[in-house]
Length: 372
Length: 144
Image (tube, rainbow over all chains, first blue to last red):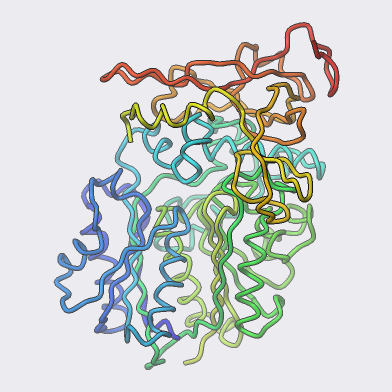
C-alpha cells in the first residue's frame, strides 16, 4: 500500500471558505504538486460537520463539488482521530481489492462560532451521558492529568511549558501551520487560564483546515509505503483506568503497527504525535515507549525537537500547526509523507503518525517509509 | 444538541440521581460508569451497585473555558473523587470557595441543577459533590 500524493491548506480561521471550498483546495494542491489522480473511492474524515456546518452525508456533497463520479463514497468519524481512522480505512479498502485508488480528504470547519459553543461540541468526543452532560470538558480532564503528572514526577508548570515553546518554533517553518510565531519561555504569563494550571497556550488553537492524500496499491513515480498500521481502544475517561498517566491504547496501536512493519521502535526516526494539550505530548511520548515514564519533559531536545534519535512534531504539532479535528490525522500523515520524500536525512528510515481521540480513548498508528 | 429531550433525561434518571457503579464478582474491581463487563479482567460476572456518595477529593481543576449551556456556573471546579467503595470518577464540586479546596478533603454527593432548557422548560438535575461539613481532612474521617 502506497501514498502517492498529498496536499494541505493552511490551518486558519477561513471565514471565506466552507468545507466544500477547503476540500477542493486540498485536492487542487494534491494534483498541482503530484499530478492528476484517478480515484475510484473517496473517504472523507470529518468529526462534527452536523454541528458546525449543518451537514449530514458530507462525503457525498464533497464528491459532487469536486465533480468526481463513479465513486465509492464514505465518511469516517472517530472523533479527533477521524483522520488516521480514515487512512486505516483507505488501507483496508485497497488491500481488500475493493478499491484501486482512494482519495482521502480530512476536512473540518471549527472556528466560526463562539468559543463556548466550540468547547461544547468538542466536549462531545467523550461520553455525553457522563462527562459531556456535566460540562466536564476535555480541557478540564487534561488539566487534571497535568496536575497528577506534575505531582507524581516532580515537575513545575514552567517545566512543562517547554512543549508549546518548541512547537511554536517548529511551526514557523511549516507553511500550512496556524501559529507561525515564536514563544518565549515565559510567554504563558500573559496567556489566560482555560483550566488551571493549563493556559490558552497549552491548548491547540481553533482553526479550519483540509488535507488530502492519494492511497493506492501501485508505487508510481514517487511513493511512500504504508509499512504498518495499528489501532486499539480504552475507556473514554482516563480516571477509571488503573493508571491515568499511561495511555494503553497508544502503546497497543503503535506496537501493532511496528509488528506489522517488522521493525523495532528505534528504526522510527520521525513521528508526529497528538498533542492537543501540553501534558498529552509527554504522556503520549512515554506511552509510545520512546522515553521512560516521567522523563519526557527532561529528555525532549529543544535544539533538534527529538527524543534520542527520533524527531518529534517537526510540523509544530496540534499545538501550533493546529488541530482541525477530523482533518488532523491526514495533516500529520501528509507531513510525514512530505518529509520522507524531501529530507535526505530521512530517505532511508521510517516515519510514524500517532493519533487518538480524547486521552487515548481510541488510538491509531501508521508507520511509513520512502520507496521511490 | 442544544435542546434537551425529556425521554433522554427520564431514562437516565437512575444515573443522574444516584451513583451507579459496577463491581466485578471475579476480580473485585469497582468502576464507574457501570459497564456490562469488567474493565480490568473482562469478566461478564459484574453487578451494579449504588454508592453511598461519600468520598475523598483526589485532584481538581478550576475550569474557566466552560462549554455552552454551563456558563452560568463559570468558573467550574472539576474534581476527581475517590468514592469509599474504591473507584474514582470525575465530578463537579460545589458549595465551596476555591481557596478552601484541598486534596484529600472529604466530599459527599448532592443533587444539583445541571442545566435548564429555556425553550421547553426542562430542568435537568444530577449528582455533584460538596465538602462534608465539619469533616477533618484525610480518607476515612468525617463519616456520620
